[in-house]
Amino acid sequence: MKLISTTFALMLMASGIVFAADKHDHGHEDKPLHGGLVTEVKDMDYELVAKPNVLHLYVRDHGKPVDANKVSAKVTLLSGSDKQEILLKPSGDKLEAKGSFNVTPGTKVVAQVSLAGKLTTARFVLK
Image (tube, rainbow, N blue to C red; front, side, top):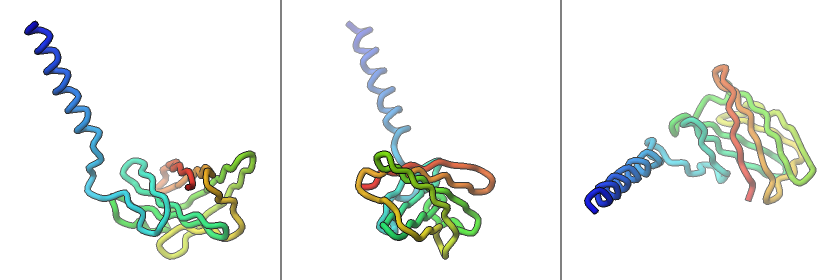
């Protein structure tokens, strides 16, 4: 009986350690600052604002804006059998593309972002 109690106590302690390691505590919030959708990849926040006539991608490193002139990105919109690939260009504090985009709810967005020679993929599903 004591072995079972000890095992149970160790399991509880271990699950607490796993829970603590899973906690999203990195000193900044993953809240949208521009009304878009936010995803985090390797401590970088990517906020996508998708409208039928414009796409914006904001990049933050540990909560601080990244110079858009140092970033390049290609976005792929997947909606049913439709696929659009769009290059984003620096525009002020963000990357931007203007045009006509299929951004209906459920559209999947894959952003391939290059920063400092490293390629990262950020994924979104539009609501």
